[in-house]
Image 1: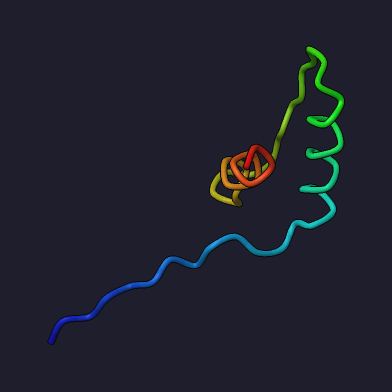
Image 2 (image 1 turned 60 degrees about the vertical axis):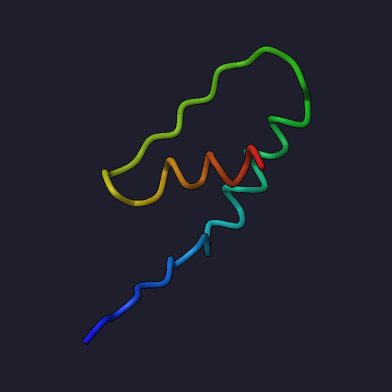
Length: 51
């Protein structure tokens, strides 16, 4: 039996994503700290904001 897994993709965190995109749209040098427990999607959130 062969099973294939499909990626979950990105979902949720729309408010946080909008905040990051707002910061990125300023196009100035800045620092942003994204903090939280491990394995909750911080890296995925950043990747989505940069797309």
